[in-house]
Length: 335
Image: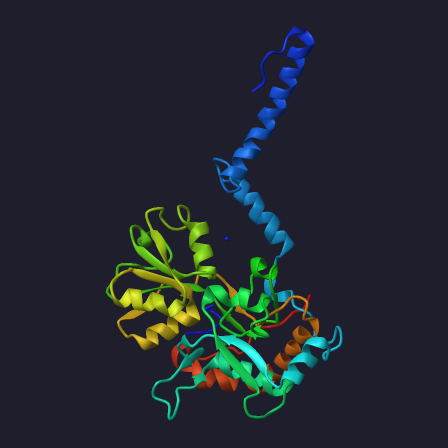
């Protein structure tokens, strides 16, 4: 399978003059009422025009979120953020510890089960370049899906390298590097299930997603339109792997997540499989504080070299077995 394919009352008025005012006010209220109702209903009127217009405006404002990062040659690469990290002697990175082949602990490894995977390789490469190649130059912090952005904003980590999709909404809270991986949302379900994909076959099915994930946002936006209203999307968990456990226990009928993660979970459990094609195009990026411009540019420069020398090696080590042959890293554009 190609990785790229895996790839939101007036009273008491008298006289003619007063009546004219009432009529005028009534006309104004009549014009404003649909707008007020639209806002009370979450930004949509009866035929959904509010949502359509809002989505169109957002799309025009942020047409390609993966192309919104700073160019590595657009400013200094060694500012106050980089200096602070160097002084501390280590880079602190938020990662996952239970996403098979991306960031996970292998219980079969010798000694303590250390973190390893595609994202871990990238985080280590960034630390090697910024801090220097030495022991303990990176401190990994395992964080749940819904705590990725708060961990960055609160300064608990310098960055997050955790299968984190670049999106317009997230760009309002954090900055991203240029993209380092391309994927798309997909459905995971038992092989024997009659679910065929992200479609009407999800009617009356219990669907699991992770809190703070693109999958959950998509499910909420599509419920009653793209997927049947009868689909139950109430099962929301802190970590994506928890959805696989719920699926194995029979507590849900399907999981919606990034296709790359879904493929890795299918590799862990041969009784489940991907259903249908990816229904979005998404890109993973390294997330950082918005004002850490020197760090953003430095990471982007590191990624330039990483894509040339180490990206394919890491992909072959961790992902080729589940995702198949790769077309290489995604193309990059800067804003």
